[in-house]
Length: 305
Image 1 (cartoon, rainbow, N blue to C red):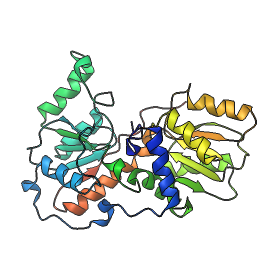
Image 2: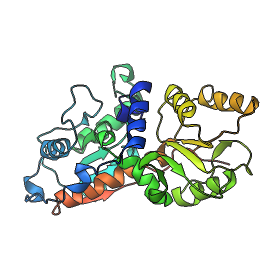
Image 3: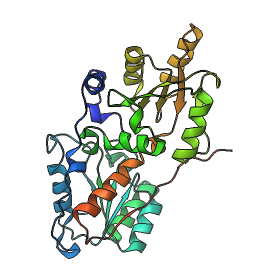
Image 4: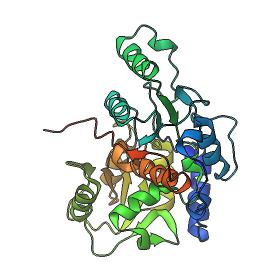
């Protein structure tokens, strides 16, 4: 549930950041640039030390308000192994237990809301089962969402661009704006399906329309951000993670009805942000080479007939 916290979850800050990226070259992320290995054995490392190390390398440091909190477990827990994933699902938790790891770093919520508040879930059987599974097996879960999205360029967005082979297609080094040549909407859709591992995609537009200029906004940035960016950058197609069907979707449909050829592709939230987990996987491997670490995909939650 990105909600574009990378850009402070506001239309003004998103547009400001995307404009600045267009106007100037983006500097490499300190997380990517820092290759120093931390000399500690797996037995010496606590959850809190790993989290503090990650935050220390994020521009701006520790946030006063953030959803990046522990969802289960303890900061003092000694780490036996780390699992990175998009969602700490029940299946991911079970695989973590089988692996012998005890620390899950997830990008998205664990308990079904952006802030992971649980009062409203009291005595809910699914919540109680998941909570007990974590507690009984001494599993700590930390959400790393806001911090990773504070990097510039955003490692999540850059991860998608790398999978798509679009790193050298950015407009003025802006990872949200891509310029292709001789592409139509069908070409883009089939390329996304093949390279991002998505079986089916929903879209608006004519499959034969030229779609050379792409506006890519992963996650769930929201219609205000989508529409403001569409008006500012006038792309041929907006590719986003997910959105309510009554907001951005209807805006695109009405825009086309007044004669403007702009298309929409819904990539899916999971596919659009899964690189967050592989980024953290590589970060842990580099900083803590003696620790067991594994990426366990949460997989797509929805199936298609």
